[in-house]
Length: 180
Ligand code: ADP
Image (cartoon, rainbow, N blue to C red):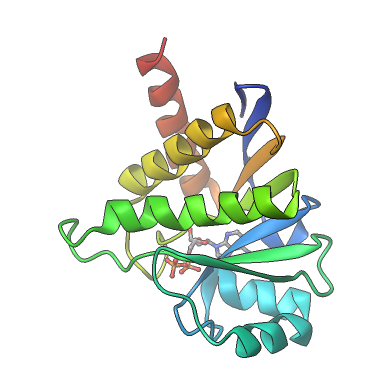
């Protein structure tokens, strides 16, 4: 599914983020940038040791923020490692932190002149964020940013598996119908 946001495009695809040909891909990292399972493990496996080498040098990243490294052996030139919140019931500032994680990535993209970025669904795996809520935050944050920042031409959400894809698609359709 593809929609226009300002002069830019927001796209949902089902697939593997490590295979994307966007200039940058986002990662759902942990605050120690220590590598892990899930999408983080997949990115480090596919991208090779150059990414971890830079992560070690950076040292860490607070929740709600993001840092940039090389893409190593990936097609994408850069990985933007975002640290989303662990979901603790919804009253611990999770929504703001998740929004801030995406915004940090987008701001880094703007600063670096990156025109296309692919995101995984941050925080909805091991970190337990309910995907209905997380997808709304992810999509509205990116769509609002694109409207103000035409320099980013494409944001692509790469959803792992059919259920994740359908959850994002459902939310995107809801957002569209709310905004006419
Ligand atoms: P978090 O700790 O932020 O919840 P996870 O890696 O556990 O991060 O999960 C985030 C999302 O990434 C989940 O929806 C998971 O299914 C998805 N995911 C896992 N591997 C990949 C991949 N190779 N490409 C895209 N998404 C992936």
